Amino acid sequence: MKIGRLQIDNPIFLAPMAGVSDYPFRLLCKEYGAGLVYSEFVSADGIFRANDKTLSMIRFSDEERPIGIQIFGDSPEIMAEAARTINKQFRPDLIDINYGCPVPKVTKRGAGSAALRDLNLMDEITLAVVEAVPKIPVTVKMRAGWDQNRIVVPEAGVRLEQCGIKAITLHPRTARQSYGGSADWALIKELKAAVDMPVIGNGDIKSVEDMRRMFDTTGCDAVMIGRAALGNPFIFRELKAAWQNAKLFAPATLKEQVALCIRHLKMQVDYCGAQMGANLMRKHFGWYLKSFPGAPQYRNRLVTATDGNEMLVILDEIADYADQTPQVQIVG
Ligand SMILES: Cc1cc2nc3c(=O)[nH]c(=O)nc-3n(C[C@H](O)[C@H](O)[C@H](O)COP(=O)(O)O)c2cc1C
Image 1 (cartoon, rainbow, N blue to C red):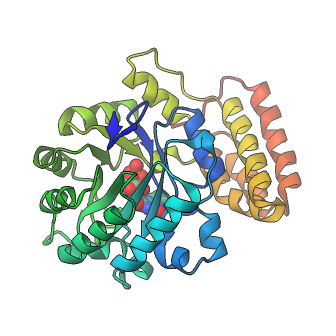
Image 2: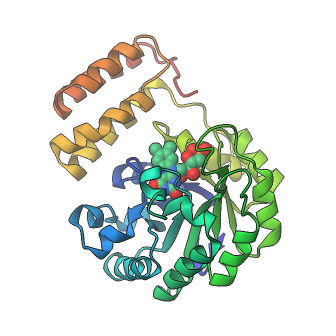
């Protein structure tokens, strides 16, 4: 598929996830088959102020390409300047605007999904960003509306296309809904019927069957996977195989899962340094290591371990256990 002039190998994308979609996680998902990866959302204000921490969140490697950098903000001028800076300093394949984040810290300042309450502001921000980076595609990721009484899809999609947006990802829940209920995929179908650009369907895809149903029932051009990839980059090889009509993979075994977790820890430490890398891994352990006998005790030890070396010793113990019980499968 193509977004603007950008050619993408397969239509199964990794979602932007704050605190998760950093370089090591993106690289693992890419290795297992993700067709496009995104950075976690980055504050346009932070980029504008040249905040070191913000700029470090944008760093990526060529191995990850194609990659989208996602930004959020409420000021057209600052969003445009941030897009220009990112394009000049980092040369991503696309820039994505976040109109979906429901977190009050972001929306109370008019950013993220708050733009869904004011489509004129959304137009202004979008136009400013599109004009700032004419050589690369600008895309949008959005929710369906602010609340059930203010669903803005498909109207917002048509307006965004007129502003020059090259693809839209729709997570069809409202901002108010947060993660409650289920995503209303019928809205993805409505959006697809209303616009000419690619539409990326997102929300609640957890399996090959879900992905097939998303493609079949909505007509979307690509799918985006968020929570189902947590502790499970393997999902991309399964989904990609299904999309290629190839033989499906068996679910990952505990042995594979632990080996990947060890690799992830080592990459995280290499990337962020010993202390920060180990700290960032704590949440991943809960996602990687579940549903096998003794899992809660191992997780407990891992999250209270003092450093990466102690974590490695515990993970090696789990690997030994997995060696003795090769039949154990834990992805579910
Ligand atoms: C931990 C976490 C962080 C997220 N951070 C972002 C983000 O930075 N930008 C964004 O557009 N969406 C973010 N999302 C939303 C996801 O990209 C996705 O739209 C949502 O999880 C629904 O897809 P899923 O059902 O496949 O998880 C986040 C979701 C999670 C679980």
